[in-house]
Image (cartoon, rainbow, N blue to C red; front, top):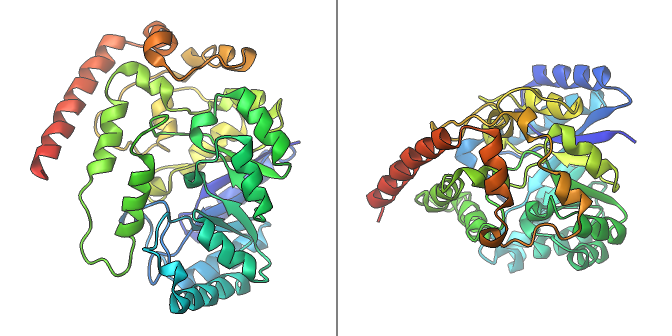
Length: 364
């Protein structure tokens, strides 16, 4: 079997040709089978990313883009993975508008929709749509029981919570329970088991509300960065999957991977990151790869990818290797001290902490 990749849309038609070229280059080994995104102009329901970070796209642009993808045999996944619409989904008028919108998406040939709310899943299942239903990572599917629950609801595919990316025992159980398409996010940049995650998603959902005239403060995005910059070993706790490590996931039945990075679609290099995963090899600063070559801040550190070759080994060889109690384990701290300039990264992180703490003072 080949590895399939779902990547962010930049909505630039000329990039579709580059995607097709990559698929031809890695034919029989890997394929970009899906591109995901959504409109940002006149959108009824938001997604997991703030609109101001995304390409400005209206419905006619989306329709044209989908047609061009279809000509290349590539599907489009519409991201409808907001976590809150202020209970509007229970309002008859809003529900009618949503169904009309879904009919439009179905008509133009959307092949899949990613959803983040069970109530919206229910609305979709009431219709007779041709597109497939994928459950978003924001639903935090991190065990077999949750996977089964969404399977019973009619999901065709699920994207797992990033926190289980290195829990191979749990991954095996989920794969056994959900026999259809199970997808993992490869280039994870969020702190593992982040206490702010669901609240950050909710904030983004409300920022995307077309009725909102004022955007909220960047409390959660800054807290995200503060967690990453707390200490160097946190870079290893981001639950990423290296290109070279895909083989270990293939061994337990995982062949579908998502490249996150819609915020980097316009100014980053999504295809450079994707190709590294397609050929299962990357030389260079792994942190740049994770960010799709558009760093999320100015505090750039260097983590040489090849020096991480053995990091994943105990996770797949030993069930329950990680007990999520870092103070007791210290594996990540000991490992990173062997593969990078620990003091230099610490110095950079101290600067980052000072910067973000001072930023917090501005909006208290």
